[in-house]
Amino acid sequence: DNKLSGLIPLEFGSLSQLRQLCLWGNMLTNVPGNCELSILTSFTNCQLLEEVDLSQNLLNGILPTTVGNLTTTLWNLELNSNHIE
Image 1 (cartoon, rainbow, N blue to C red):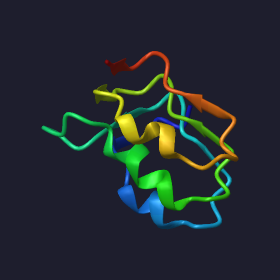
Image 2 (image 1 turned 180 degrees about the vertical axis):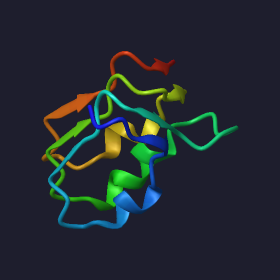
Image 3 (image 1 turned 90 degrees about the vertical axis):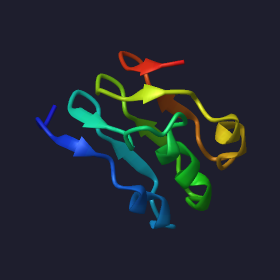
């Protein structure tokens, strides 16, 4: 809980060595008008990614079907307490 607000930068997806991203409990949002959570799609380039926690933010939209194509090293994806379909 860092009281961060604003858009989650899609550039996180270009961090090829990223292993964990824990941004829970803030007021972060996704791109306005974008139906799918594009931040999740951007993580397909993060082949070492193990954990993503974006719970308790202000994210909304549809969980992209490509979430199943994320790296095989991902063992924890937390999105609870958002407005995701």
